[in-house]
Each structure stands twice: as structure tokens, then as C-alpha cells.
Length: 152
Image 1 (cartoon, rainbow, N blue to C red):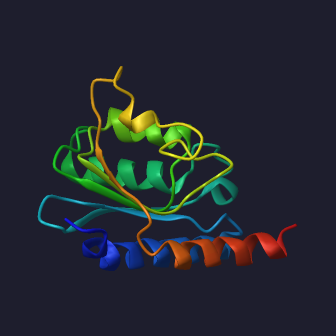
Image 2 (image 1 turned 60 degrees about the horizontal axis):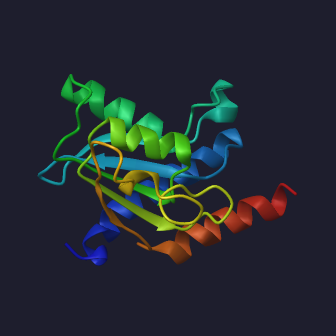
């Protein structure tokens, strides 16, 4: 699939990211698609809202998808997230056996898929998802830049 195949799903993730603004969380959003393209999990950052350091959009969406499926293995699924995952989220992606990761903006400060590390494609791990990057990256970057301009 091409990166443009995920534009619609990324728009759903961007909507989740915007919803995070209500609780003053960093606007990052994610959705998990099953093998048919149906959304089975949604998430946005909830660290501030829930005082939970693991409340990253990816983890929230992965938990929701696993609950919807009734199992922790998300084989056949795709995670679509507005920002390159951090090390915690990259680990969760590997451990949940997602087939594919699609992300928007790169994270030069904490990215663990390409920018600083490449956790998800580390040959020493037993699972390596396909990675598609840069999907609607400008929209994701703009949303984050606007947020951080008002919080610094």
C-alpha cells in the first residue's frame, strides 16, 4: 500500500489528537485498523488527564484494540499515529505483533522508529512491523507546533 492509502485513517488520528487539547495533553492521536481497514481502537494522549505516564496515544489505542479483539495479539492490524513513536510505544508495537505502523511527523527528540533509534526494525527482536512514514506529516507537525508555541 502507498502512504496516501492511509490519509483517511490519519485524519481520524488527527481528530483524536485535537481532542487531547481539551485536557491540555500533547495533541497526539492514534487509531488501530483491522485487516479490513475498520477502526478497532482509538487513542489520544491522556498523560495529563489521567496522571498516567503511560497514557500515550499509541498505548491507549493498542489497549482498546486488544480489548475489542479479546486478545493481546494484533496480528493483521495497522497502527496509524500522528507522531513517530517513542521507545515505550515502539516496544508496545513490537510486543502487540502489529503488522504495520503508519506515522505522520518525525520526532527528532524522542523518535524510536527512525529519528533516534529504530526499535521496531531491530533484527534482534522477534517481530518487525512494516513502517510507512510521513503520512500527512505537515498537518501533524502544525498541530504540535501550535500547541508547543502556547506552552513554552
